[in-house]
Image 1: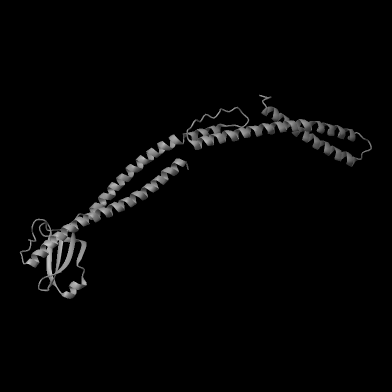
Image 2: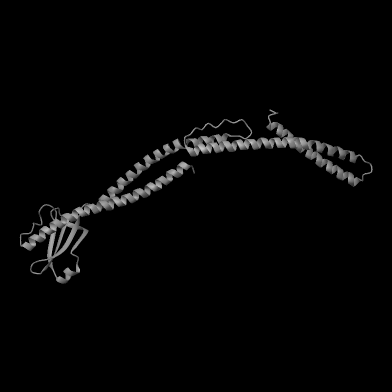
Length: 284
C-alpha cells in the first residue's frame, strides 16, 4: 500500500473518532443548556404558584394559552419526607388545549403551608423533541463529516505530492540507474533537509558502487591474464609427460584427466577475459 493511502486511511479514522466524540459532546451540552433554561422557567412558574397558594390568592388558570400545566395535591408528612424537595424529569404529557401528547419537562416540588400541611406541586412545560433533535444532529454531523473528509483528503493529497516530489524523483532515478553504464546525473533540487541528505547519501553510495564495480572488473581482468600463463605452462608440461613411453596406462589415463581439467579451466578463463572486454566496451 502506498504511503498516501496510509495517510488518508489514518486521517479518516482519526476524523471519524473526533467527530463522533464532538457530536456526543455537542448533543449533551446543548440538551443540558436547553434543560437549564426550561428548568429556570419551571422554577419561576412553580414559585409563583406556591406564593399565591401560601398567600391565599387565586391560582393561575390552567388554560392560560402557554401550554404550561400544573397539578397540586395534598400529601402526607411521611410521603413528603421520603421525597426530594425538587425533582426534574422528561416525560410525555397530554396538552388539553391541543388535545395531543407532547414531550415535556416536568418539575415536582413539595412545600408546607402555614397550617403545617404538605402539598406536592407538579408543573410541566412542553420541551423540544429530543429524538428529532438527535436525528437532525446526526444528519448534519454526517454532512459535516463528508465535507470535512473530502476537503482534508484533497488538501492532504495536494500537500503530500507537492512535498514528497523530491522523493519520487529520487526513486525514479534509482529505478533507471544501471551500474557500470552511463547514467543521467541526479537533478533533484529541494529545500527540505531530509530529502537533501537522502540525495547526498544516494549519490555517495552510487559512487561507491561504481568504484567497487570498476575494481571488480579490473581484478577479474588482471586475474584472468595472470592465470593464463601458468595454465599454458601446466598444459605444456603435461603434454611433455604424456609423451614419455615409460608411463603405464593408468598413469597416462590420470594425466589425460588432469589435462582435460586444465582445458576446462583454460576455457573458463577465456570466458572471463571475454566478459571483461565486453564490460570495458571493447566489443559492440
